[in-house]
Length: 373
Image (cartoon, rainbow, N blue to C red; front, side, top):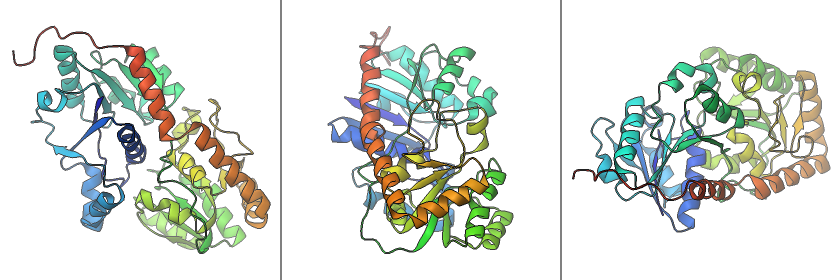
C-alpha cells in the first residue's frame, strides 16, 4: 500500500511535537513493506525557526538519525496533487496544514476517488479555537483521526465530519527505549516547551518550586522560553538546555533519576484523556515519572503503577523525594510503565489501528471522472 502524508514538518520538531509520532508512524509503515511519501511545506515555521536558531546542523542530524525517512518540500499554492496522489491508497492530512490545501486535497479526492482520505487532529484547537477547526472543509474526507475521544466526539457533535475515530499518539519504541549504564548527571530532567502561558502556574507549582524546595540537580530542555521563564528557572536552580532533538531524549532520560508531566491547562480542563506524547516516550525509556493531575478517563495507563500522580505541589515534592531515594520504587515504576507502552502504546499498535480503520472503510469508490481526462 502507498501512504501519502501531508504534515507541517517531519524533519523539524522545533515546537512541533507531532513530528515525534509521525516519524515513528512512517518508520513502522515502512518496516511492514508499505511505501510512504511525506510532504511538508517549504518555509514552514518549525524548520525555519530551527534553522534560524541552530543552522543546518539539526536537519543533517535528522537525516543521520532517520536515514530511511525523507520529506518532499512543496509550495502549497503550486503543488501538483495529481502527481502527489495519483498512486496513493491512503492519504493522511494533518490539521496544521493550510485551510486552502486541506480543501484542495478533499476536492481532489472527490474528483479522483481512488484512495481513502483521513484528517488527523492532534491539538486542542477544537476547544480553544473552534472557528479555525470549523473552517476546514472536510466534506470529501472519509473521516477524522482524533488523538482523544473527546476531540472525536466534538467533530461529530459540531458536524465537522461524519465519521471520526480515536487514534492516540504513541512511542516509537525503536528510538525510545532504556539506555543502561549511562553516567548520572542529575536528579530530574524535564523536556518540554514553556507552553504559551497555558501552564505557567502549573510549571511553577509542579516543577520549579519542588526542585527548589528539595535542592535537586535539575535541567530543562525546550523552546519559546520568555525572559521571565528563564529567570524563574535560574531562581529555582534549574539549568536550561534549550532545544533538544527529540531522538536524543532517550540518552538524556537515561542520565537522570526522574521526570515529570505537567499538562497544558486546556487538556486538564476541557480535553480529559489526552496526555502529551512525552508521557508515552518517557515511559518507553524507563524513567520514573511523576505527573501533575490529569484525568486518564480513557484508561490509557495505570496511575500509581505506571507513574505517580501528585495532586498538588506538596505531594509532588513528596513523590519526587520518594522516587529519588527509593531505588526499588523507581525500578518498579520504570518497569511497569515500559511494560504498558510495549503492550498497548507503541507506533506498531497505532499502525495496527490505522490499518483496521482503512479496512473498515473498504475499497474506495470509483472515480466519477478521470483527472485530466
